[in-house]
Amino acid sequence: MSEGRAGSTTGARGADAESVGDGRRNQKLRTRRALVDAAVSLVREGRQVTIADAAQVAQVSVATAYRYFSNPQELLRETKTVARGFEAVADLPEDPAERLDLVVSRIADMQLGDEAVWRAVLIASLTRWTEPSGDDDTPIRNRRRLDVTRTALEPLAATLPPEVHRRLTNAVNLVYGVEALVTTRDVCELDPEEAKAVMRWAAGALLERALREAGRE
Image 1 (cartoon, one colour):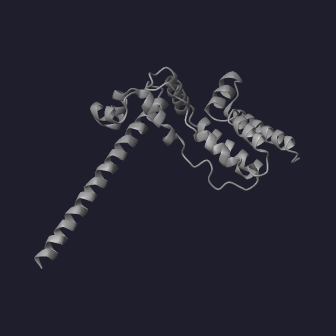
Image 2: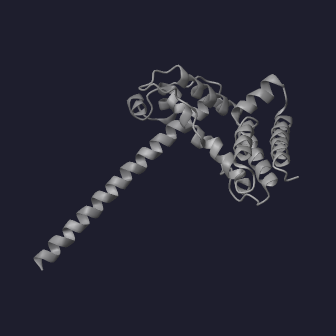
């Protein structure tokens, strides 16, 4: 009987310890999210993002904030996960043209609807080129957009020649996303609706060209 009680007690303690560990992890996630949300709020208000200001808005100490993010650029880069807002590649149709048009439209709506945040994210990303690096490789952007484009064009992977499919994938990445937002809005001086229309037209035109090269049309 005593062994049973001892085993039961040990099991309870283990469960309690696991519960405490989960609670701490959840608290860390909440703190991190609060800091990212604070950075987004500061950007939308037109204010410069600093760790101290983000900590104040998130209602955590500056020391705590620095344990999560070492500089404002790192914090701003993290806002990408918040600004995504929805899954760009969810429930895509089978037709390649429709898939690509839907993906470009979704990304354009998301970014044009929150320009200040995405411009701040772009600035933070570009500063990586001037930051000291621990290795010889120049820091690069993440591959999220490339992965989204590959998903959109996935039905053509087995039918287009590999070199055409690869060229199409790379070319499409030039005509949507935050860089295309800056080009259409600042260089071309388009309003958001026309900027989106141009991105969709350009992506569709590239797809048509690839299909012609492959003899599909």
